[in-house]
Length: 214
Image (cartoon, rainbow, N blue to C red; front, side, top):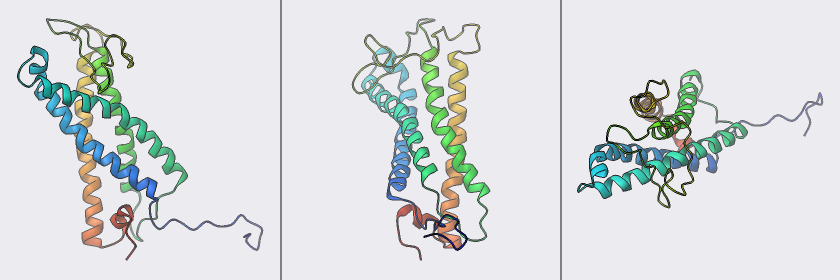
């Protein structure tokens, strides 16, 4: 239906997130809740995995989970971003500034891409040195860096102490600091949602849960 002046019809802003958006959001949240503890278990059991200790099998499983999700998450983040661009967010409650929430969401999108890339680069960059073998990139179906592996090195492998900027230490520190930043952003994101739900008692959280507005 055209307006009296012949302008294109006005679209009504959405009142809730689409089902696909909600599934992508909560699916990503679940993946993050799994991949982060798996990464810490992987690091904690590294020596056993290297020397065949009693926790070697746990190290392999944690590595499989962490690395597999590490490659899947950025792909799903891109899918979610593409979906979001075609499906606008419901408007925030009146009197709420969009700058803070939207900035946190944008930074979370960036981290969902940068974190896996820095982890991948860290493993890609490390060659055998000082008695330590080159790292394995374990997946459930195959060894990504091993013979016949399907996962390429995105950084040229070098000894960890090589005189170069693009070494394991640089990428590993970036990966670790980005995890800390992600934790802060997640707390801000979760805290904002709970503040809207329990203090302001509006529909921000209800919209993502797929519940009817009050």
